[in-house]
Image 1 (cartoon, rainbow, N blue to C red):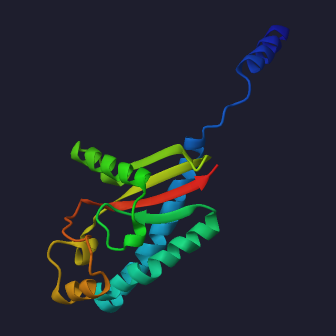
Image 2 (tube, rainbow, N blue to C red):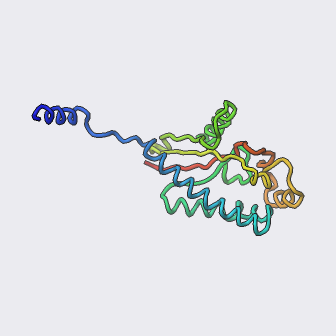
Image 3 (spheres, one colour):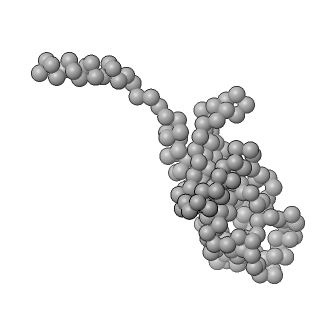
Length: 187
């Protein structure tokens, strides 16, 4: 018995305290935040589609999505948003880290990786501060093609031309990477 106790004590002393892994620790939380943000946004989009079709849904992305991101950020303490390589709203322009992640997602898709599982998480230095960065790819679903597809209804095209004269976010096919949810938190 004494030998077992000594072995247990020596084992505990040799291994020391567990070392925290900021990537693993924060990735799980980031995934939950994405789920919340996407769930809120998807619910609003579906309701708008049901109520008034794709032209009504455009208003959700334009007017409500930024508020949902802001509210989610305030609730969680994270910076939450969306970005893409083909922008509709240029306020969502990718920074260098996000652009690299999006380009990497495109390469991973070309290599056959499942978009629905595609994410990137990393601790980087931002203005001298350790910051956790996370991105989750947004796959283009059939519903998305109403406003982001190659062939748009004339009324949808007219509304997009009116609201987004420099729109780059069309021409997608189901299964393309539409963009990504992007989150960050200072550690």
